[in-house]
Image 1 (cartoon, one colour):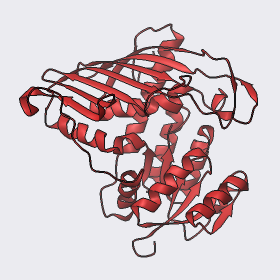
Image 2 (tube, rainbow, N blue to C red; image 1 turned 90 degrees about the vertical axis):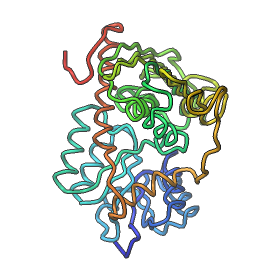
Image 3 (cartoon, one colour; image 1 turned 120 degrees about the vertical axis):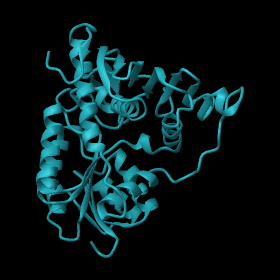
Image 4 (cartoon, rainbow, N blue to C red; image 1 turned 180 degrees about the vertical axis):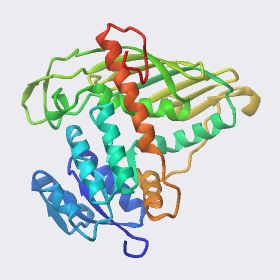
Length: 346
């Protein structure tokens, strides 16, 4: 590293790359040296926009660079394992786009490679860094709504229409659960705690889709999923996941019901609203939240861990826990909604 500036390679030039590049620019402390994209059109456009000098079409060339200390991996889902392991072997710190891998075993292999090579590995769950989630975590820690006994969670969008690989089962094995559901699973684990058991159903409700470029494709993945979670602490939760809603929700919607109050995130009451009479009196409390550029908090936390200015987060270990939940959803759906234990093979 040059001083406190981290040399970063952006691996992938698709839709989510812009989020990461903007977050890095807003957080400060990083210099993006190179962007790697399969075709040079998107990569070159992003390079011009964010002032990145070098563009390559082979991500391996970025790993060979001595001026690169860390990588953001935003390549298609089915490449995450190979790219992340190669980055770990090159001893680059890693911020890996969700889902961590295509399977629990793949996630473990990535974790093992990072630990073996002593590199910081983080998995990108942007929602946990939103101001309303940080406020909710603080209130839950302080017992503002008491013991949580019920959770309602939604992740719903119209779905991606800019590329066909999202709908290929060989590339996105768990469909909407991999693409959207993992965000909600991470919020549930972060705010409520471990999920002990799952009952779930998945379906493909729109078997053919028209993409932005006019192509019509067959959908090979589940585009909808419903899960019931039994949390280790005794709470019960429902989770709806959809890639076919014309409007959907604003990234996520989460409702938490406790013994002493109710907490809503991203609802019609705003980013966060709490009904907790013992703390705030009667009526809903809807505080203003500190503003920050999109992605700034997440990327600042990552860079602090890379440089030692702050603690390294445990998002990779937590992502593995989430992969176990994804696996349980798939196993339960295969058994027509039968209750399965998270982490078991039965």
